Image 1: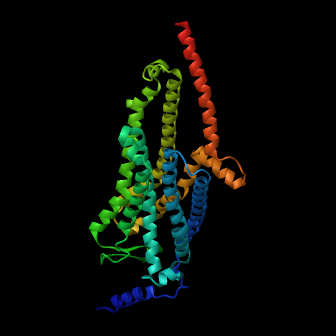
Image 2 (image 1 turned 90 degrees about the vertical axis):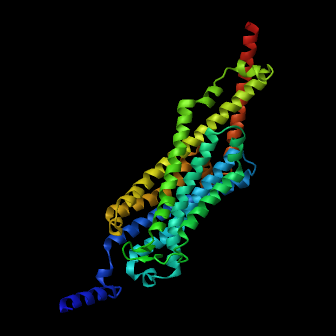
Length: 386
């Protein structure tokens, strides 16, 4: 062996053992990434915590809610919890590791159980956030597409809780094997390539394909298919909408000629349909914003062939874009939902105001009674003129 090759190997080995204060162990660009991670975590944590608190307080004030409102709150709570755990647990450690880099305690103990847990929580919470949107998309699909007995079964609170629990179980089961060293060639730890707790080895191709399918392709396909079916249902079929536009006379005939019952049934049908479409629009806008942050990183991950390309400035920027989508989605949903937005403003201002649902119900009841009177008067006029 030549002296030059031997000295090269010795130098490469010593470069790993340089003291922590060496300039070669500090990469300024990762310090910038760590600083950017701080506001992402703070905004996401405070926003998600506020949403969770508001839903809990809302349940305390009126525990007997309408079934659809209760299901929507459960699904929104699931999305907020995934964002809360990611921003409250993962982001602080990622920011700390990227700012301190090899000087951090996480890097000095590469096989530390804490770093392995942070890596597990990182992938699990991001995957759970994706599947939170999947459960919302499935809920909207069942609400708009199905009818009759199937509609009631898939819209039940028990089934909604089951979907929420299943999403977390799938996410946890997918990324638990490296935590328990189920595969010798797949492990968690501190990665010097990305300066954070993540995968340190991915030598099992079967596992790599499986986890990419679970965390990337399945959520994307389900969300796209559900909202595509909903769009086709509302745009092309319009079966429910046509049913809502029936004249009062046709509904009156099916209710024994009672005009008051006919008008009440028509108002309930229209109110229910408008409510389903309104909730679906909010869910679709939230899902579209999430996909806008989620899909670019997913496509880039499948396009590149080496881990070095994943750690390029473009790759890291796309990962952080995904983090932004996960952190801000609960706030976006709360902003689009007028009732929830008003409730949050009330809690922030510490106002003792009537809960929003009671306000909306009273306003809706007044409008409904006025509509009943108008419908009944118009029916009497038609009967008199006939």
